[in-house]
Length: 101
Image 1 (spheres, rainbow, N blue to C red):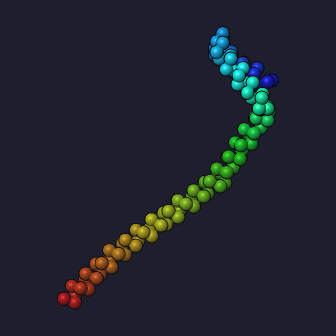
Image 2: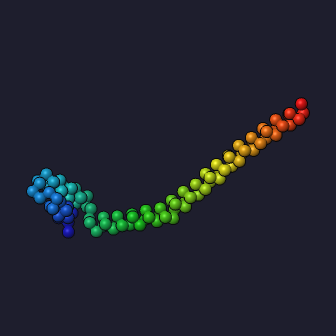
């Protein structure tokens, strides 16, 4: 089934008698045919892309994002601990200065 027939069949129910839509469909089908786009190959490429995108999401993107989140949490915990130690050091220095006086 060629693209022109496929596109015409898709638009016939929605806009029967509308010449502008049919002209656009014919023009789109002509462009697709000029570029050598074939329905089975296009469908195969879409399926392959979906599979690769899913696999990358599942096994590459999610683990990397989990690692980034874990590192960010560790850095935030380290900064919070550093601030606590600074506050304790300041308190200890003030206590030491008070005892010296």
